[in-house]
Length: 143
Image (cartoon, rainbow, N blue to C red; front, top):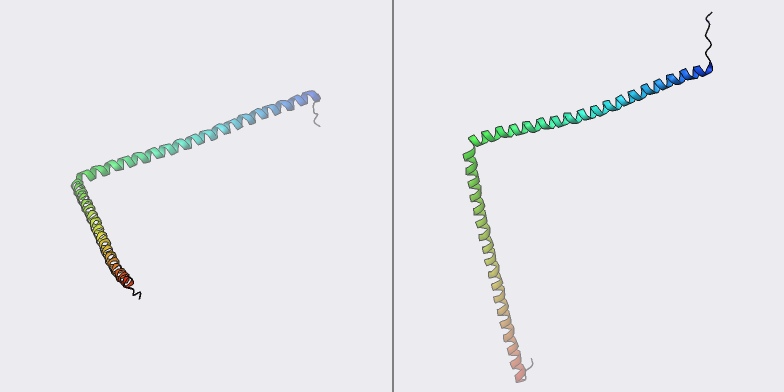
């Protein structure tokens, strides 16, 4: 048979405590490494996103530069003609708006004049009727 050496109880607890302390130190070191690794991953993902945004912005700027070069070479005259046509049309529309407004004002004033003339004739007719009634009343003929 195998004989097990006799270890005093205090030394046994010291060995178990030492193993537990080494284990706790190992767990704390691993936990810290995991935290550092997750922080590194987060910072790397943010850097990757910023890099992607920067690349997209550069692509957009280069695309704009290419478009502007092509546009200024080929279509500069067409653009100027279009701008001139647009300004002419806007001037004509402005003139037409002014003319329409003046015609509307003229029509409103003529209709108001006609209404006033009709009211004047109505007032004149009523005045004549009242004068006739007043003459009858003066003569003594009430009805």
